[in-house]
Image (cartoon, rainbow, N blue to C red; front, side, top):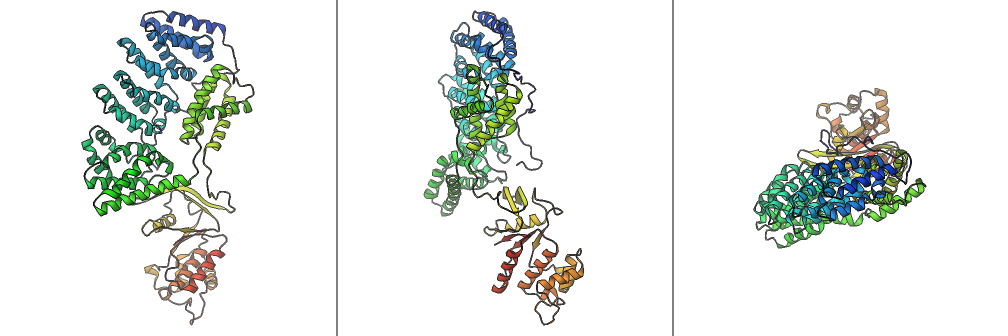
Length: 632
């Protein structure tokens, strides 16, 4: 949940089908005129020709494909011809030109058919002829600039293999393309950072200067995809430390002086953990101690424990080693504390029901089953539809494994544009909705101990964050209260329990219902100093002016405040003379007179004897319409 005023990084799109052409009927056969036009173009491109003529022919053919649909590429034999052109040095440039035209003109209409050719294009980036290297790189650039953002993981894996190639030209293009994908689709790319960082980091140490420079530029673009505002200012220093190991200690020092307040996720960990691991190898105890402090602080801000799972196998052994090997007892204690925090995360991951991974083949089976159930006439046996279905399955598999089930992204970006050539919009959106629902149900872990189905009226069900000074106390925390229930607020001294209570009472908790909807009363033992000379009745009348004096006296009588001078709770007595037990009863009486929906009690049994503790317990359990939050 973004804080107020926070700039949220989103993919730039309008969520519409303005640039998508849905088929009104499913035509298994393409117009023979379109097929002939495409075959004629591919025949011409099968011979050597001038670049400008090849571009004109390819662009004209791409327009025909856009009009005729993706089946035209299969039925005309254009894809088979295209692969032959790629294999022949004389026609490679023509093939590159065609792929570039299809990518820029047809977009999703051709994407599933041309993306698999990226590895071949990468090989051509190291061709001995400069003009072939240039057109191959241009084709890769055009394809990757026009792909579905959520398909980037499968494309990136092709590029990772390119970075590992022996020929430096391929490495350079692969690094450049990784960086351009990060810049174009930061939200989708950020989820791939744990895989991308090691590959790009290794390339920064390549012996070839061109590769090192391309990798450094790519690393900068990769890190810019991280949305964590606490980490962003350190991106240049983090990159510098990767390139120059002697800067690791200074970078760790800067990170240790940072107050982390934003929730920490996998992308943020992906760019900081490599530096922290290097910091563990530093000679100075001070630096290794600071690494432990950073690990402990960041770990406490991880909302979803599974975000840390990829990093625990490398990080935990190093922190454990420091906790055993360092000579400074205090530094070992700090490391032990960080190790315990990591251990708690690991335990939570182990205990929590894991989300179910759905590989592409499982997603493909789900897609075809949904097609059969919702659209009996869907062209599931058509080879072009099969290719597009496999591409959709690969894309949503990546999204599912990231537990990303945004309805708009699935509908407008990842699924429907690739169903469009085969069915009307209504069918495509219905299929997408059913597929999304099924995948969500199969993949998501079942919530444990949820109270959503418990009986009772909801008073509050909100998510909020709470800070005190520079310290984050609660981050994206859910608060769910039902009428007539009693909730304990537990925690060590100084963790912010009373701060939470006062924030609720003062209306400072984000998304909490306002006072005119939900009445909350902070129940205190203490008597306000300027009212300490009043008697009991006048004191309550002063604090609850909206209630009649007769009503107040009647309620005081119910709570044991009698018109009897011999009573320890004589209504005419000075307020300051009451014992702790009677002060608590008076505070509760005042809260009831204020028609409180929620009582906020901060250690209410302090200064109470056994009898008054029993009375308080009976009172709270008897309140069937009043909810209690009790610090203990």
